[in-house]
Length: 125
Image (cartoon, rainbow, N blue to C red; front, top):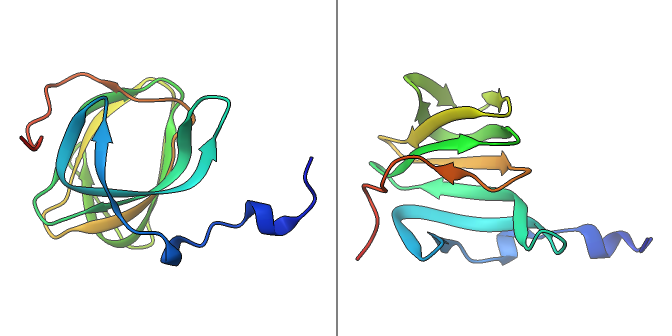
C-alpha cells in the first residue's frame, strides 16, 4: 500500500465538470466529477453529480445499493424530496429515478454499476 496521503486526495475544485455519458448515452443537464476511480472495476465508485434544473436520470436498479448526500439544491427520488444536508442510503436492489426541478449537487457512493430499467428521456442527440 502506498503510504503517501497525497496520492489519495482528490481536489475536486481543480477538476472540470464533465457531461454524464454512460454506455454511449449522454444525459442532458447532468454533469459528473469522479472522486474515487477503482482501477480493478474500471469505474468510478465515488462521484459528484450536478443536475441542472429539470434534469432527470431514468428509473434504475442499484444491485449493491448506494449512498447519496445532498450538497446543494433539491433532488426528488420516488416522490421524496431531499434537500441540502439530507442523506439517503438505498439497500441493494432498490429501484428509483432521480430528478431535480431547481438543480442540485449530490455526493454519491455507488459500489456497483446501475442497471437502467427505463429508456432515458433526457438523452442528448
